[in-house]
Length: 263
Image 1: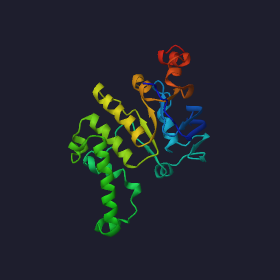
Image 2: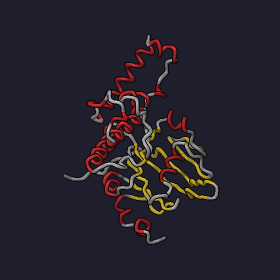
Image 3: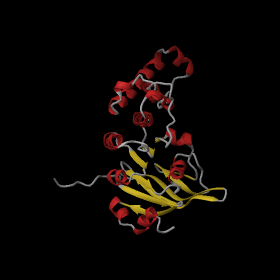
Image 4: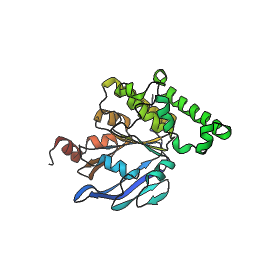
C-alpha cells in the first residue's frame, strides 16, 4: 500500500517572538512557531525547558512580556483564558484537576459549562428550553463516554477510578467543550505501557474523527515520534529545533540537549 501523506489546513494558531519572564528568570525567549489545522504538533524538551509555560501562554494563563499569539486570524499581545475557552481552545494539565467526588458523567457535563445558554432559574426548574438544552448536553456527553470506552464507569465517582481511567476522563472533559485546538500537557505521565497505548489510540482518533488540532507535550519520545506530524524542541526556554520527527531525530542540537552534552 502506498503511503498517503496527511493533509493539513491553514495555520490555525501561531506564536510569534514570545518571551516570558518571572522576575529575573527567563522562562521563554523569542519563541515562534505555528500549528496547522488537523495537525498533531508536539512540544518537547528536558525538564524546565518551558513547555508548560508555552501552553499557558497559548491559553492565556500567562501573559508574555513580548510577542503575540494569533488564533484563527485574530492577533493578540496576550490571550485571555475566557477568550481561549469560548473560541475553541481546551486544555488538560499535568496534574489532574477533576471533581473527585462527582461521577464520570457529571465531570464531563462540567466541560459543557460554557455552552449553557439558559439562565440558572430555568436550569433549576428544568423546563422548556433549559430541559431541551440539558438533554442535548447529556446526549453529547454520552457520545464522548462511548468514544472513550468508559461506559462501565459512567456513574462511578472519579476518585475511585484507577489513574489511567482518570486521565481518560480528563481528556473527555476537555472534549466535551468541542475544541478546535486541544492542548494536552503530558497526557501519558504516570501511565503503564498498556494505558499509554490506549491513550495514543484515543488521541489519534480525536484528531482523525473529530478533526481536532492537537498540541501535545510528552516526555515519552517513542510516543512523540509515532503521534506527531511536527515537533518543536525547547531547551532552557529557547527553541533549538522545529521540524518533522525524522528531522528532529537527526538534529544534533536536540541530541546534545537530551544527552546533556551542551550543558
